[in-house]
Image 1 (cartoon, helix red, strand yellow):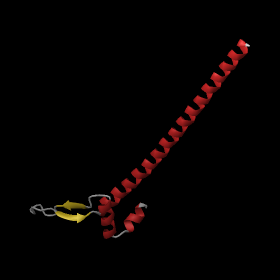
Image 2: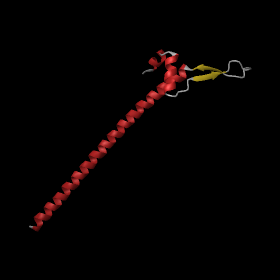
Image 3: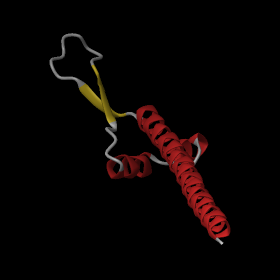
Image 4: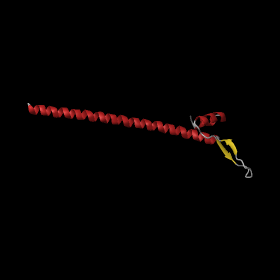
Length: 102
């Protein structure tokens, strides 16, 4: 989803998403300095911003996982190549010893 998609959502939809992802959806203000209690309100900007940050973090996590997978694949290929090289070297040494001993 994009920022525009989140902005088009109703407050109820945003509240459900905020609850689902455990995003605090309320803020408070004190309009009257003589008032002891703060006034709480639904903070759309705060929720949309948190949802966007979460989306970016998920995308980065997926990218990091793909990069780690690529590194693991290359390490496995390097290990296989090393094993093949060592086996070829051993076969060559054995063949040399057999030819010398004949």
